[in-house]
Image 1: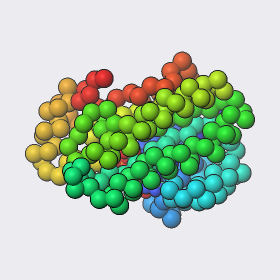
Image 2: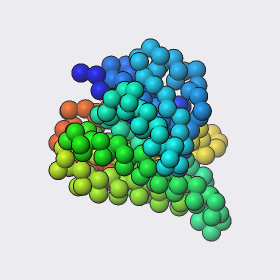
Image 3: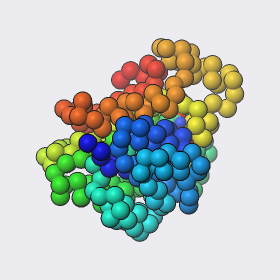
Image 4: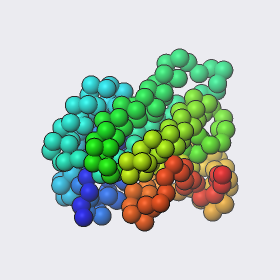
Length: 244
Ligand SMILES: NC(=O)c1ccc[n+]([C@@H]2O[C@H](COP(=O)([O-])OP(=O)(O)OC[C@H]3O[C@@H](n4cnc5c(N)ncnc54)[C@H](O)[C@@H]3O)[C@@H](O)[C@H]2O)c1
């Protein structure tokens, strides 16, 4: 059965791969993204699969509420929410500016709150739904220059557990995925040089970096009935860079 799958930040990177994956499965995908219009590839995927694009900056509660109500009116209630938006600014803790700090917390944590509240309320009303939050291995291990980013991602992992407890009695599962390092715009600060790429490959038990499709497969599994007894988990997709 075709589900309505809402994906934040689906206009590029891992989010766009998620849009592709769920659309190919036959789901109707709604993209919520700050870019005012979809890029060519996103537009093409959505056109072919009956998906829709709802521009909004997830830091702005009003914009999010308008986008969510437009989405529900045009597509029906959301069965699967994927909170994928996230931004990374690398800076040592002693140098990080208040602006960098606020930006990452506003986008990665407050934005997740703004999107999840209205969608979860409507899932509660229907007593069904599932949510997957994209966290990061930086939320589990210490990474140099990623104090603020790592703290936002630890918050995402923690909020996943609390939401799983609060929404579980309503038949709603909530899990998170913790990617390692991938070639995307957000991932590039981790890979400034060939040396950095080699270093991260060596930290992986599989001796390679991952592809966004390898994240998307795990998200699709968590969102599927195959994972119906899983909730509150934070699954690493790191090629073994992190094992706990
Ligand atoms: N790329 C990696 O190596 C990596 C590793 C671990 C975790 N992650 C996480 O995976 C997720 C996706 O990362 P990515 O690498 O694909 O990112 P990306 O920068 O390539 O894409 C992010 C998308 O989010 C959108 N976006 C940004 N700010 C927004 C806002 N305020 N409101 C609405 N949309 C906004 C952008 O327009 C873009 O389409 C993020 O949560 C990121 O933290 C990425």
